[in-house]
Amino acid sequence: MIPTITAFEQSPDRGQGLARDMPVRWALEEVGQPYDVRLVSFSAMKEATHLALHPFGQIPTYEEGDLALFESGAIVFHIAERHPGLLPHDANARARAITWMFAALSTVEPPIVQREIARYLEYDEAWYEQRLPILEDRIHGRLDELSNRLGGAEWLDDAFSAGDLLMVQVLRRLNGSSLIEDYPNLCAYVARGEARPAFMRAFDAQLAVFTGKPSGRSEGKE
Amino acid sequence: MIPTITAFEQSPDRGQGLARDMPVRWALEEVGQPYDVRLVSFSAMKEATHLALHPFGQIPTYEEGDLALFESGAIVFHIAERHPGLLPHDANARARAITWMFAALSTVEPPIVQREIARYLEYDEAWYEQRLPILEDRIHGRLDELSNRLGGAEWLDDAFSAGDLLMVQVLRRLNGSSLIEDYPNLCAYVARGEARPAFMRAFDAQLAVFTGKPSGRSEGKE
Image 1 (tube, helix red, strand yellow):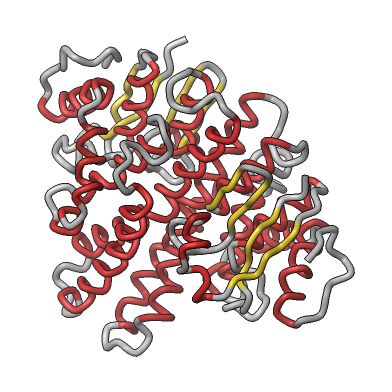
Image 2 (cartoon, each protein chain N blue to C red; image 1 turned 90 degrees about the horizontal axis):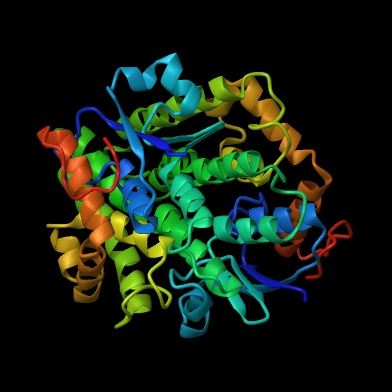
């Protein structure tokens, strides 16, 4: 059965692959699972039909037969649990990979998203310039710790896992910012993630929604 | 094998049970798993020994034989996966419960924690009074959506699960605030969680660390 995910009809990031369908597409591509995409408008996301699938009126959702899920982290985990390739077989290594999934979303992402929210919603406020360094200090704190743990390793815990997938996707929000450029090992880590063929197929597929030109590289169906 | 978790030596919330050892203690109590607790000071959390367990220098950690985990969400999931009582047997219901775990930590918690951060760190800033309504609007948005989804149900998806455990624990951060008092069904939901014997044992155990008086109710060992 081919699952159906939802994505933005109009990409707010102009196809940079930062919307939350991206990690789900990437996970599906990593495990070789074809998928269908249903595009939703910003207004349709807040209507009853979509809210029945996603109580917080966002994307992505994931439908597969009788099952309907939301939350990109939960969907990536669902895919990782049902297909080989995103979680190690060894029980302890698997638990550590899941730990990195939660760390990406609960510990590393929030300060990064807070800076984005401030840039979008508080840019014209008198306090914006004063708050920005506070927000960036919080991000630096997390990146210091993450960089120290990663050290010279290729991935966070031996082989590439769903934990790396989510962490790379979180760190990509800082691409082009000096915040991450201070950490060469984190930049190289993100680049390794972005160089994976599955990442590139997923990226092209979401970009094709923005450009209106279907991608030839995706294994999924749009 | 009895696992060991870490908790704050000095509770920053004076035993209100908002520190992140609380959901782990609660999960362990729900499944009847005894545990040991190692208390760590704020300075010890940033030292190499603790950073080896928790790269972000926080609590809780979870040690069980060769396995070392961090991130309260991941630890709760680890406990829920290995013991009956926190995840449904039905595969689809299980996936939905895991979705609520991620929703609690990734979607509902961040705006609540942002308000706390502002209260602690920006209370004396000139912009604090102006920003507070913005922060509270974001929380209201999430609570509106969560309240609509919960409706008159007892728990988020049929039986109590690890998703409810994490969601109740997130909402408890708003106890005593008018923010949640506007939602009688969410208040009743939190009260149902707090009335569970396992919650009460976990709460007493963490409170005993603050008061210095061992709790008789906990099944865990301190």
